[in-house]
Length: 339
Image (cartoon, rainbow, N blue to C red; front, top):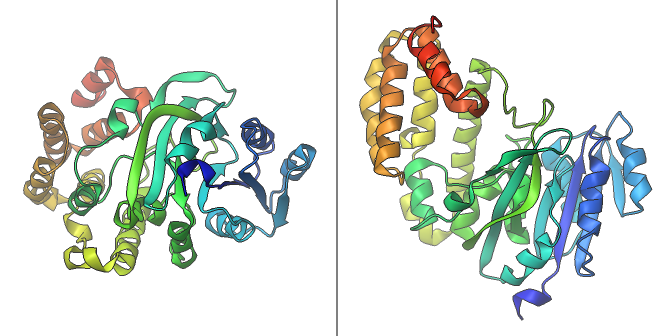
């Protein structure tokens, strides 16, 4: 069987996105593929989402609000295709996206990932992609990258196509409400990951989307991310194929966890935060970044640990809120807001 004969299911999950969901659905219909299985799940929306969905005439289900993960597994049960794309209701597929993806689908593939163009709430381009095309293709073994760092470069939910058996892992992810967790992290351990350095969808950035891009740094959110990450790693260690179990992940040694721990300690002004630097700098050295990026990251971590809390917070916001990055913002952070 060749990749071109496989069918793909697109599951659109929606909760209160009346202004966007019809665009998402029509972007799939415009692919004009008879082998595409399209299902829409309205997760108990309280706005006009269901009316917008109904206008399209596609197969759709309205369920009691149960969260994104459960809505997506419900959609999974309504489809049969061997590969699945979970499309967020505020995102879209680009014209010809499925034509570019389907030829890569074969039994050995766990995931196909591709770039998404960032747009605002009004569909105006923000002039960037997630991830950047030159970064999505990562050298080396992605399993080793995950073991060392806890992550690898991946687009958000709408930029991925998963093999169906991988999607089944969502059913036991009771610790998580999102879809872009265990199935993204586990993919390299279940087969090949194909990375396409082309923009095949739109990723909408606005005040209500779940990623929280552009919001103020929140210590409660950081703690939640750390706890979620611990659950993800525990889950991965449990489901990891036998040939990989001899080298399981230690969550507290991963770059992702160590960095979040330092950031949280710095924001809270913990006196012992300086002692976290050696292990974190060591993890940066093991990363797959270029030497200049390793040096910049190491300097960032040192400054965050040593500077007063107000300055550390400014630096952290510059790191995690790209729209604030500028020479003036950096000067402001390093001068305590006097620049």
